[in-house]
Amino acid sequence: MERGNQVLMNTYARQPVVMVRGQGTRLWDLDGREYLDFLAGIAVCNLGHAHPAVAAAAARQLQELVHVSNLYYTLPQIELAQRLVDLSFADQIFFANSGAEANEGAIKLCRRYSHEKFGPGRYKIICATNSFHGRTLATLSATGQEKFWQGFEPLLPGFTFVPFDDLAATAAAVDEATCAILVEPIQGEGGVRIPAADYLPGLRRLCDEHNLLLVLDEIQVGLGRTGKLFAYEHSGIRPDIMTLAKALANGLPIGALLVTAEAAQGFVPGTHASTFGGGPVITAAALAVLDILARPEFLAEVAAKGEYFLAGLRSLQDRHAIVTEVRGLGLILGLEIDGDGVPLVAACRDRGVLLNCTQGNVLRFLPPLIVSRGEIDRVISILDKVLAEL
Image 1 (cartoon, one colour):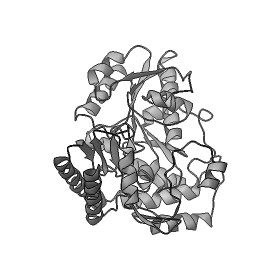
Image 2 (cartoon, helix red, strand yellow):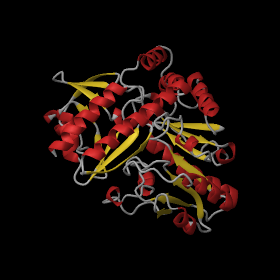
Image 3 (cartoon, helix red, strand yellow):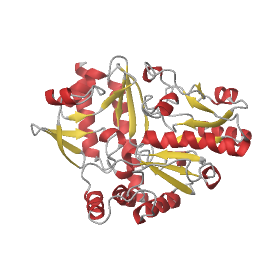
């Protein structure tokens, strides 16, 4: 850790532990201590650590073809794009390397599509307060949390912010310069905020009425996290654009922009690109991930375990006055407390459980989707003790 502090830039508040190995839902540090991982690399390792099918797919591809650039076609990329099209609303896919890049691509696509379709002057994107869309300058400008803006101003113009889950405020924000609405179906970094059932359908209607693009950022909540493959499926609507990343290759870097054929017309050769986006090794691994995540029986079990976990957290709320709210869907869950959540994270880590705190007072649980009910019970038991001590 001392060596890391010397050679790594000071951009993370790292916890005092050095991880060296992972298997399934478990991690081990340099001293050999075992941890139950209920963060999963921040919703990345949905199939757990070192999943054999994903490792085997990447290893096979490493021995065949690693990189040729997107000046050529490669089979794993085409096959992954086809699989995503078959599983979703989308007609076409663009691959990047991260969620921020996927959102950056979505922002560019919205602006250029509207410019080509309606002429200059339509460039504004309505976003939600408390949102999080990435760390590039454009995605930072689309993020509705001022704490992330500090020191980076002036931000990119053209983003309007309205309260999350407020259809009236969103409708009032639409003007002749608006081209799109960009939201997370569930706000993860914003504190596991779940909107009312009519929110996404209402946004869809609003976009249809004003010829706007509806963009859903499913980087954290997509790919099985909510008990369905994509979170938008809970609402019965179809977006125009959706961004994915995090869990798509279970830890290997990939982002994806999923779009309708209509929206895809905004990009033509030369308007957007990525040197490493959708490389053969990463897309081969992602195909192995989707083979598992997309199984109906797998998703049904995620939903069932999510309900089981939610019930356990609510039992803690019944026993501890410091717990003010429990919320979540599938296996993205939040426990809000009346106080600072950071000491709770440290106390759980000391007892062998990894989680994190967002918004200062919301414990966020993002376990691998392969977590067992017994492991959920263990976490509830440890939380019970930690909350009692607090």
